[in-house]
Length: 137
View 1 (tube, rainbow, N blue to C red):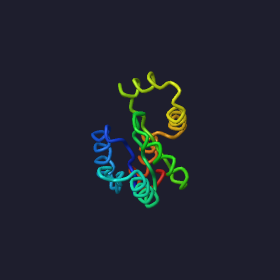
View 2: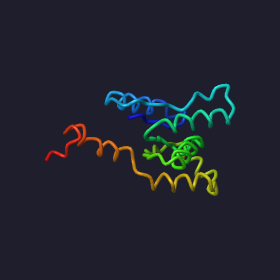
View 3: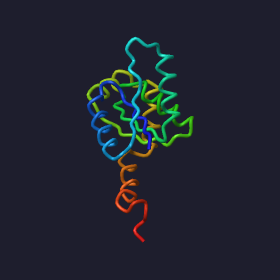
View 4: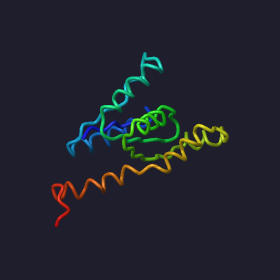
């Protein structure tokens, strides 16, 4: 399965650990493009192309990145299954206190709260891995 793994640069270590776990389970992991020296439009187009190629999208989000919600919205628009993990951070809490009326981030938090969690995906995959796709009957 091809999985697009969206996350902010600040979550690079968590993203790398999850990518390693997914690859060890036999999945192909696609990561967002490197933003250095690129325009916002180029980043958006490259990520859209990668998301379109993938079967599912995972998102690690701390609330500090506006790019991750864009990737999630794009995946939903393309009809891709999306799974998320929310990672609390001091920066997030600071942002929420400093900008309590940030409508886009409030809406992103509401959306992320409604989406299934990455942990649920792992649980769904476990029976197939354990029984070779057979439900054990």
